[in-house]
Image (cartoon, rainbow, N blue to C red; front, side, top):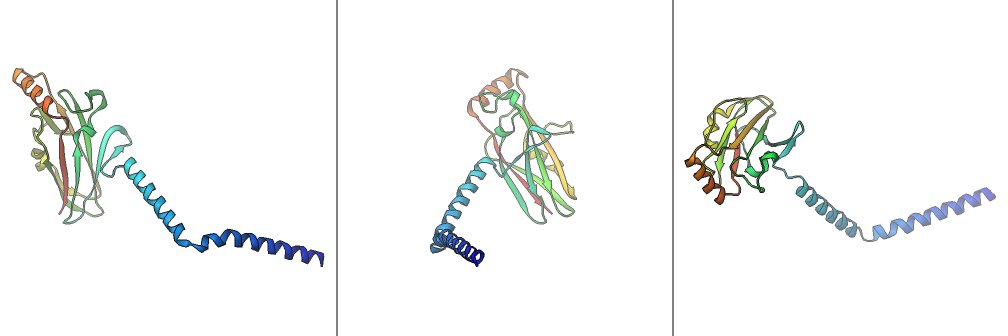
Length: 199
């Protein structure tokens, strides 16, 4: 009898504790939802500022910037690029591109099916005259990004990596030195857009 009485008292206490803790939460469920929504907004905006969607670092080479593109049939994917983000740190001069700086970036194409692709470039401001580009593994230098487009097309089955190297040559001759000085004074960054097209 005493045992039953103790069990009953214990059960009542447990039920009262549950009512005390659960009742305020159920009284206004909208408040909880709004708090969760506010937390989600703050959390996601924090994540966006820490992890930009346009690029990632190559885990094998911490200096190399990788731009990921999803290639799908009759679809265009694009990213706006600031060349400053791809500078090799040991050539960096006052946080801007300048004569003597160089760098590279990787274009990673990803596709679920076999298809043809094209890569196109569009400059959004004027490039320094002596800044050149090269597709890694090939000898030819290009004065304009757009000049490489003929070589940046073909077939993709799953993933394809293409590394673009760039360098601002300097001290070649007096004419180029004059051009470098002029370009170095008026430019802080070079911006362009990369487009990938699935066919």
